[in-house]
Length: 341
Ligand SMILES: [Zn+2]
Image 1 (tube, rainbow, N blue to C red):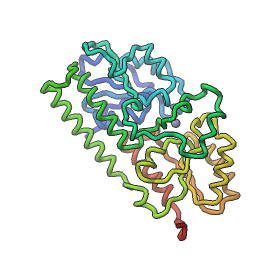
Image 2: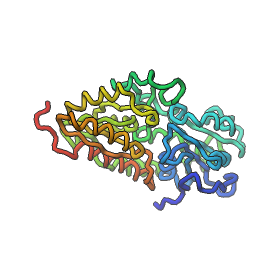
Image 3: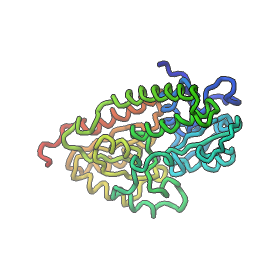
Image 4: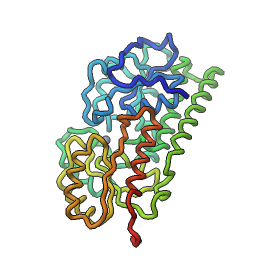
């Protein structure tokens, strides 16, 4: 299928004044990966775009007025939740977005709906913060209220979990049907046909993602290096692929790494084979950190850049395959120690 729909950045014109004429549902997402995912799954039925340029950290967002204005044209806004996009709740109330479940049943063309992924994903699919010893003392290092991300205990970086992606899409599908037909029950014959088309399209998309290699971490190595991440963007992926996760250095990359976390990292990392996953935005601080380690390390260490926001990606498949490829390099790039267990 040809992918055409995604109008990619915030500089793209905000033309649509309503969805009545072309009958595509207009979905605006907070972040690029969500728009890519919706476009690849449902591009024939929806028009999707995102608010935050992927070069910008979602933790530290300043939207241009043009991006803010585009909110007026949205039928539906998809975001992770206030744990991640702390800049959004104010805008959503300013533009009168209603929670999908709270919205009244009367159909109105003026209506704007919003859905926070973290609110609709089953708890079993969510990852909690705080597994790692590195991160627990970080709360005290942050100025109060500096970063909403640090307040919640749920890790909001859900989109590298295929199970979470699928659960979210299933939920979005129902809303697309509702918005498309103005049919709140979704029970008409037309609604059922559309529902089938959407779920067929979603399944084809999920199948593409599931074919990415490796299917599991143990398909690559018998014994894992200690896998760290600079910031916890990869927890969901690691868990889904059965790869033990040593933890992350900072929840709030804009504020740097607390000295206590650096000390703990250096101590553990010096004794073990490690791999650090770093996002393109943070390669510099990671390089500095790894340089500190290099002097004292007794075993191999490496840094692999992986991009969960898909700065360069044209599709979600592209983004996802890129991250898995990086992970593969992280696990298997060097000869593994012979006699570990
Ligand atoms: Zn983050």
